[in-house]
Image (cartoon, rainbow, N blue to C red):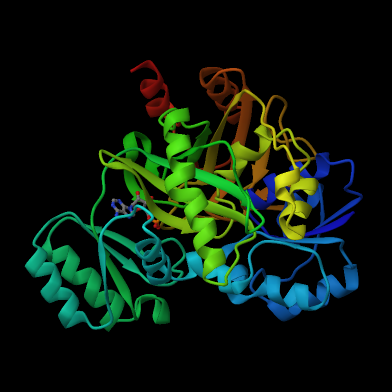
Length: 427
Ligand code: AMP
Ligand code: GLY
C-alpha cells in the first residue's frame, strides 16, 4: 500500500516508522514532513491545514490510505474532503473531531451521558464569567478557551486576579480569536494524570498502552508548560483495576455517546484522564494521537498498524486482536535552548547517522531540516529519543545514553523524565 501521512512532527515520524515496519507498506509519503521524516518518506511541501492543497496532492500520489495526524486539519474536515474523493482515511470526520475542537461540546457530551469529568459552566460574556468566579471564590480555578488554541488555551488561575485577567484576555481581548469567544470555567481536579490513546471504528474501542507526559519545561516540573518534554509507557498509576473501571465508565460510554449523537468517531481517540480521589475523570479528549505520547506507545505495538488503521475505516476493529510488547518505553525530548519562549534554529546537530538515528534508540524528529547530508534544528522541540526495554529503568537508561551522544549549540532537555513514575512503582 502507498500511504500518505499528513503532519510534520515527532508524532508523525513515529507513525511513519511504525507503518514502515508493515509488510503491506510499499511507499510512504508525508506532507509537510521534516528532515528526519524525509529519510523514511518522500516529503511534500504542503501545509497540514491546507485542505485543498492536500487533496490535490493525494490526487497526484493516489495513496491507498491517508493518515491525518494533527488536530487542526481534522477539525477543519480534511478526512471528509479525502473521503469525498474516494480515499481510505485514518482519522475522524469534522463532526466527530469536534470532541477536541470544542471544549463546550465535549463537556456537554459528558454531562448528557454521565461520563465523569469536572463540574463546569459556559460563558460568552466576561461580566457574567467574572461574577461567577467571585461568587465561587475557590482557587485554583480552571479557565479554558472553547476552541483550538495551540495547546495554550487552558489557564489554571491561582487567585481572583489571575482568573479575571484570563477571562478578559480570552473574551474581551480575543486572545485566541473565535476560539476564546466562548469559555468554560471548570472545577480544579487533583491526582496523577494518565494519557490513554485508543483505536476506534465508531463501535469498538481498543485502548492502547497507557502513558505519562511531562509538560513543564524544566526539571522537577518547574518552568512553563510546553507541548511535552518527555513521556513514558506504561503509566504505573494506571493499574488493571483502574483500566477496567475506565473502560466501563469512560471509554465505552464516550464511543456510544458519539454514535448516539450521529457523530461516530473513527481513528485515534485520546483520553486525557485524571485519577482523582473520587475516581478517574476526563480532563480532555483529543481527536488524534498525542505528541509525544505516540513516540512511546507505537514502539510497543506488536500488531500491524496498517491492519488496524484499515479496520477503523472499514468498521471491523472487533475482528482484530491488538497486541502489545510486555515492555516499557521512554522518550526524552531534546529541545532548542529557550523553548517554549524564544529560541534559535538552524543549529547543526551532531551524533546522528545518515538516517537521522543513533544506535540503541528510535530518534523521532520533531523539528529538523535535512540539507547536504546533515541535520539542522528547525523548531522548539527538535528530537524525541525513545528506547524500549524490559523495565522502565532500563528504557530510561538507554534513552538517556542515546541522548548524551547527540548535541548542538544550546540543546536543552529534562534530566528527570520518568523519575516520578519510578517512585510511584516503588511506593
Ligand atoms: P489541556 O490543554 O486540556 O490538556 O490542559 C492542559 C493541562 O491543564 C492538563 O494536562 C492538566 O494538567 C491541566 N488541567 C486541565 N484541566 C484541569 C482541571 N479541571 N483540573 C486540574 N488541572 C487541569
Ligand atoms: N501531549 C499532549 C497532546 O498531544 O495534546
